[in-house]
Each structure stands twice: as structure tokens, then as C-alpha cells.
Length: 270
Image 1 (tube, rainbow, N blue to C red):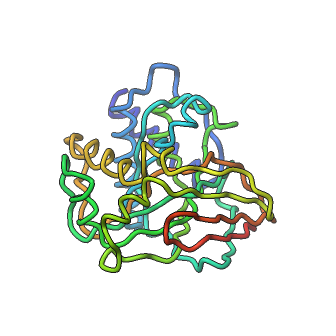
Image 2 (cartoon, one colour):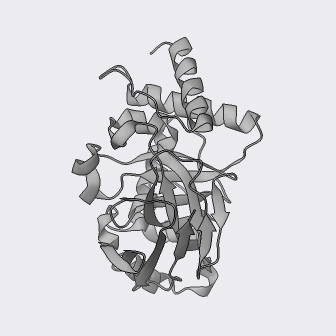
Image 3 (cartoon, rainbow, N blue to C red):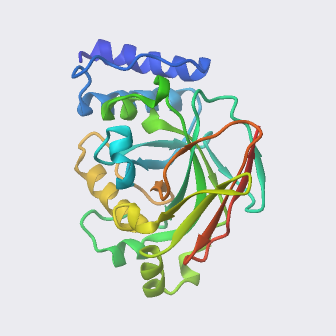
């Protein structure tokens, strides 16, 4: 893709999001991953110029059980903004789906860094650089009809990120690191719609554990010469523990977390 074409694609994607309008994906083989990340960064520049603030990143497709479903076979990442992140109470929150085209829900673990993480570090050292962790719902959305795309298409279109509803935070200063490492490798999340269990996901789905997914992302971002390194204060979501499911106004979705000391979540969508 030429610079002009990438600029045009960035504007097309931003305008489609603003207008809640789906678009055609790129011609097969035309959009490379390198070009997609350049478009992603250009969109970031346009959004920050308009007043949004980058507060972190989202990692997508870390759950290997859904790779065949979406024909994406490796993790991707995108930016998260102050306009797409929301702290919510665990008991219940209401959230509007009006901005989205084909929203889906994903229960995910998020981490916030107390200091910049180092690529290539052990998971124990990575955990020591984290200020807090939490459980929340990522609302993912596809600008491509029926969720049909190639991996590069998802990178260009915000990494499919629509919003993140973040539950109460647990601070690492209050945790036993050894026990937390073990818990992050063995917990599960039960996802329910209107009280009916829809799926149960294991932490091991997410590249072995959310902390392993986080470590992978740090290394990938560090190897990208055009990506800003992850800094102190950044929040990173680590990918869905269950499969992703379509959501509609009027539905109430909830989780039950087992094996990890995090509050359950409950959200009603309007």
C-alpha cells in the first residue's frame, strides 16, 4: 500500500466508526500486517489530535480455541483510549451499544503497569512491574459484515476494540506473588446471558495464562521499531477467556470467576 492509500484507509475506517457504518475489507493480499499497523498508528494520531488520549493497549486473538472460527492464527494488538475505557461497579452497570455495528462480548483480565516492563523478562519479574489487575468485559466490534476478515483487516480497524468495562482493581501490594502466578494459570470464567450459562473458559485458553499473553505482547511491541514502548500507567487487556458472543440491547450478561480473587461482573446493555 502507498502512503496515500494508507492515509485514505485510515480516514475511511475512522469515518465508518463515526457513522456506525460497515465497510468492505481490503483486497485479498493487498493489506499486509506491516501496512495494517501503520494504518493503526495513523488512526491513533488522528484520534489523539481530536482530543482522545491513549491509556493502553488491547491484545486480541490470544485465545487459541477461537483461531479457526475467525481464521486468525496469531495474536494482534491495538490501542485503547480514555474514551473507550470505563471503570464500573461489579454488581451491575448499564452500557449503550448504540455506537457499534456488530458488538460481541469478551470477559478479559487487564493489567496496569507500575513501571515500564522489560521485554524478555520472566513472568515473575513481569508481575513485579504491575500495579494492579482486574476483570472486565471488552466490547469488540467489527466494521466488516458478519465478522468476515483477514488478520490485517482487524489490526487496521482498531484491533476490533470498541470499549472495556473494567471491574474493581486488585493491587499487587496486597497479593502473594507466588499464589497469584499459580491462580493466573488455573482460574476459569463462566459467562452467562440473562442467567443462562453460555460458555466456561479456562485461563489456559489465553496462551497458557493472561500473564503469558501479556509477556508475549510486550515482546512483540518491543520488536516493532515504529511502536511506542509500553510505559508506566498503561493498561493492557489480554484477550478473551471464553469465546466471543454477539450482544443485543436488553440483554444482561454476567460472569462468575473461580480460582482468582476478582469480583464477578454484571452488565445490562441498552
